[in-house]
Length: 176
Image (cartoon, rainbow, N blue to C red; front, side, top):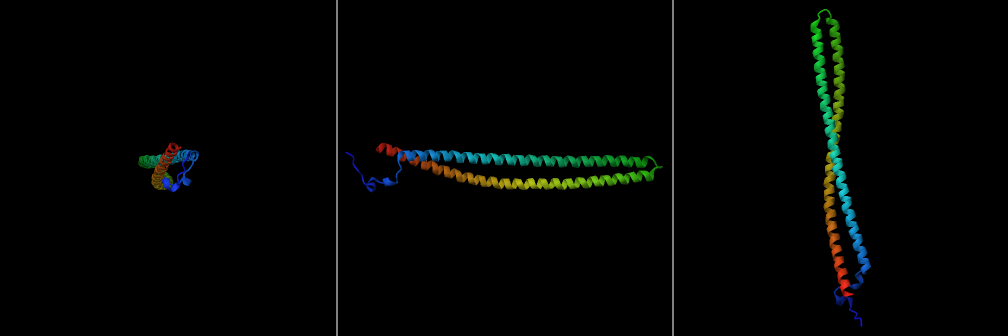
């Protein structure tokens, strides 16, 4: 003989309870979502780490190139100036010719210096751009950390729901 218990007397509304197969599917779906969310967050963090590392490396390379070009220009300028000054003082017969050569070389060096200054400005812009990108990446990282915290809380909620569903399933199994 089967005894029918009124839902309100049993302690909860049986019409709201799910069948065991539905509970199992829900648990599997929630578990799958939990794993997928964790995977997505992990992937996002790895991508941001890789982008940040790449930006730092590019910034370092550009700064090294800038420093190297500046040193080369200074050495080249000093060497050429030294050679030209020695030549001017070495022969008094060719003062005007050597002075003209000096002016030509000085003009070339100024042009070269102007080109390097322009390159320097361009490299500084790139460095600034990379620094801005780093700031943006830090902001994104901060957002991602907050998002991760939110997702972690959501995972915790889903885990609690999962635990509750398992508990209900156990109760239903014990009842039947």
